[in-house]
Length: 123
Image (tube, rainbow, N blue to C red; front, top):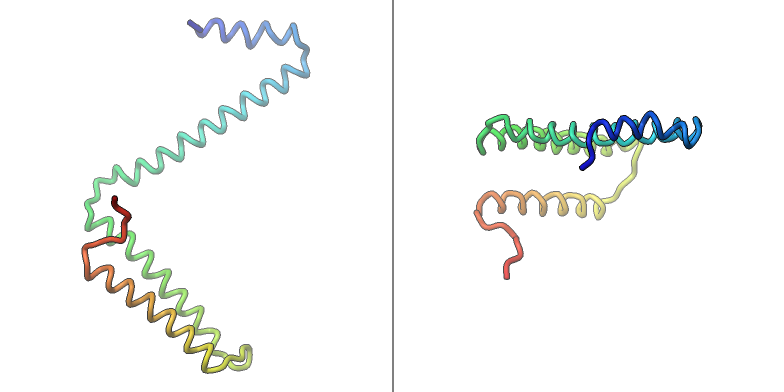
């Protein structure tokens, strides 16, 4: 079984055998690997903090829905900026496509809240 002293011997004795340049490259690679591992662990800890908040389903819904609704409202405001006739030109057919697409998605969203069934594949 590999022990800590074996690792220390490898790190300090092995460079003498292979040369200083390889030793520097070796240490850079070790530092890079440790950096990557640290970032992965940090990412997992961040995900765990969100889960470990102790929030229930209602609180989680409020937190997530507020952000998503604000994003939708911001997108609609951006779309309304396209109404400036000095900057953009459009025709009624294009507007009908836009309103139909938005209306269809809004109806689908409303319907998904009205029913408890989700579109999931089952065998």
